[in-house]
Image: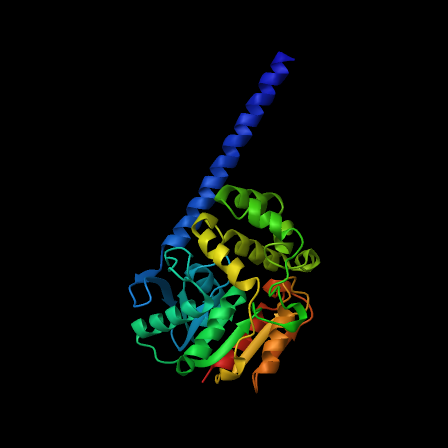
Amino acid sequence: MRRFGAVLLLLLATGSVVVWVLYTEDLSRARAAAESGSILIATPCGPIEFAVAGSGTPLLLIHGAGGGFDQGLAFGRPLEQAGVQVIAPSRFGYLRTPMPAEPSAETQADAHACLLDALGLQRVAVLGASAGAPSAMQLCIRHPQRCAQLVLLVPAAYAPAHAGQTMRVPPGLEFVVEHVLTADFPLWALIKLNPRLLVRTMLGTPQAVYDAATPDEQAAVRRVLMAVEPVSRRTAGLDLDARITSDLPPYELARITAPVLAISAQDDLYGTWENAQHTVSQVPGARFVSFPTGGHLWVGHDAQVRDEVVKFISP
């Protein structure tokens, strides 16, 4: 028995070392991606981290929860190939963009305008994804001259269908927020052990959609999960997004003068399909692209989303 116990302890120790080596290697790659390719610029609205990629039609790409400039660049890569210049900021509390004294969707919108001033850009297309949608809408409300077009992708927005809870909470999300999105290792471990759980909770996408996806599409979803690392450098932004998007008021959408395109899937577990539908109904001439399935990550519709965005913002 003593020999068996010693062997068991040795196996456990070896397994722990292997896990730790894999974790440190993955996190080193994640940190490197989050720390390279961006610029921190001083503006009247405070320091703002951003990156620019591609050439052509300028698009201010405002990332969702768990993101940063790196999430914006990753989403924008296919757009670059279609002649779009992607301008990807990190919002308040994400990576190197600090949290101001009074953060809100409105002050974030003003910071977007400050970034455009610093870059010498008067008017751009704007895309707000998920929790990036409130500041995208506020930019086009508060600074209408800056917005050539507005794309709202699976948007966090007010809708009467679930007033008082802007973004529906997928089952199990509270556990993930409290115990997983608090430090780098718990998130990494769950990505490795049970990515399907995070697909349903954190990514708001039905597990059946993930299971039915192609291997390439499943790999893309797992890359989205891993791209949240290091989550320790995004927790302040995640906390702010949770506060802002939990109960958004109706915005003065009639003040938006730019053409509007909203995109969502009916089975988005965050309920953004209702948000997009209501928003479009409040903006004259707005267009709604709806998918029956795909969840919050529009799984299976990447090419369609890219084509719709490129067509909409092209001169």
